Length: 271
Ligand SMILES: Nc1ncnc2c1ncn2[C@@H]1O[C@H](COP(=O)(O)OP(=O)(O)OP(=O)(O)O)[C@@H](O)[C@H]1O
Ligand SMILES: [Mg+2]
Image 1 (cartoon, rainbow, N blue to C red):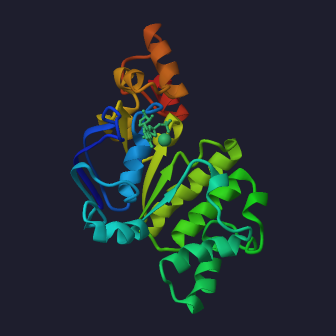
Image 2 (image 1 turned 90 degrees about the vertical axis):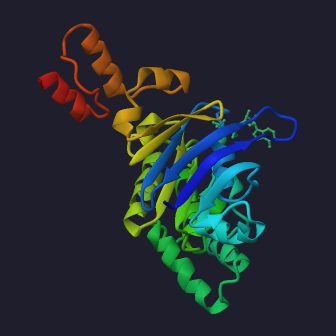
Image 3 (image 1 turned 120 degrees about the vertical axis):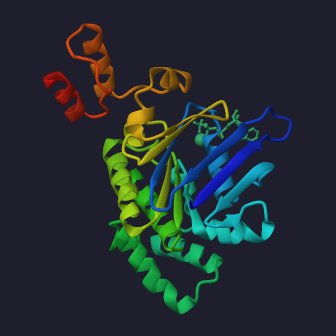
């Protein structure tokens, strides 16, 4: 297990608990989605995974390292990269290649290796040739891919995307999702935080958070078709699932596991 969280609880100063007894494991190389409504604690949990906030109660191991040991803060940040929601807040330089190089310098990579790592990272996100571009001049999808390149440059074991598609148009979202799913092929574990059930349906496993607690954890086909769980977590079911439920109510399909895809809906209708 590349991430092991056990009974994690957390409160901000003078706030009610934001995470309560959160326990879960992430398997090496999987795409693990975390879904939940606004304020359910997703970003707070993400910041734990990257050692941006300290463990208050419970235990957390990231890439084999105990997150409550301050000596592990920087090794954890290098092993587990983060990409945030707003691509406009992620850049420190007005030149793409310098932005990636900056992260490498922070982690003391040898100067002579940096140019090669920078161009490899840009190529790996489909941005070869964008070395001298101002990040702010890029489209939203390109900005997020650049932010992912900056993380990939550090050769992380895990990448956490905290609603990295939330501000993008459908095309940008598709670009970033395709890239996120392709990272798995490179052996990188992807933790994908999202509001979009469509995106969570593409993960290997999904964890649902509600009011700082784990409401459900399992495969998309187990979790994302549970009416009560979706309702409690304030999530919208997928269109094929909704259509299946309507058809079932009208007696037009026979009971079967609810579908997550259009193909699944079609199969249910043919049965
Ligand atoms: N720095 C902070 N100080 C105090 N309270 C905070 C802080 N950051 C978040 N909170 C509170 O913690 C709770 C959980 O917030 P968090 O950002 O983790 O949720 P989230 O699931 O990521 O929400 P969203 O979907 O809106 O991004 C919220 O009630 C929020 O107001
Ligand atoms: Mg958030």
